Image (cartoon, rainbow, N blue to C red; front, side):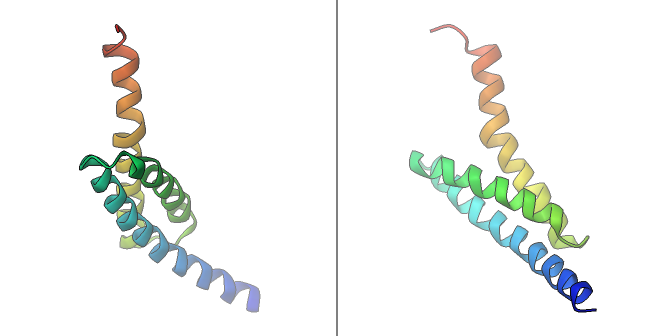
Length: 92
């Protein structure tokens, strides 16, 4: 019985964690856009952690917001620069 209750508690805490980590990632990425390049890597790392945390949580609105937001940070912070530098900006 305690194992089942503990699982529910972990799932509930991870849904809030994903949303809170998303907010922290937004702050880091916003600081990176303002010119503080040292905040780009922590922003991407928090987005990765937030995505994993969101996948472990219950299916609620906060989980969906956390997954979508963290995924958006990953696309803008990792995928978009990779595509631009690989396919469009390949000449020195």
